Length: 207
Image (cartoon, rainbow, N blue to C red; front, side, top):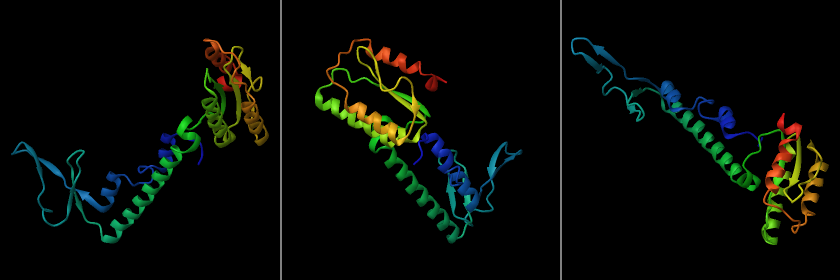
């Protein structure tokens, strides 16, 4: 799937976009039971001509009532469409909660600098962090334009001096660099802030 936000995805695949919202479906399978203001009574009065003539559906949101006039085939058509939409939503949720997206979310920027703040992680945690970062590089960074890595050591260590174009070779190089990092490299309490400032100074990212 493309790296887009859920709001953008819903604009493309949501119920409203595909005319499957409740209000749209109701307008296609029936008509709203109207109320008119009766001057002599001084209140809204619902018409009664359709009472018992059609099945009715009452919306819980606003209490409006719809008389349902659609044939079985039309109802089944909307059932099929909604089942397809449900399956699409399931696939999206599974995608969002799997692999690197479960940890990092979905990268939406075209140019990024990833700051590595491992702190004093023990060897197993250090390797798990590198596994996760390797995964995001391969699964998501490969779909953007430019990237760089900065390790928040006592003296921030850059993979490249500035972000460079994404390619199969550059991603592979970044993964190799990541796994060559020395866990014992000293860090200070200001390392992360300094690394973030370095990342923000990258013109490709800040522009």
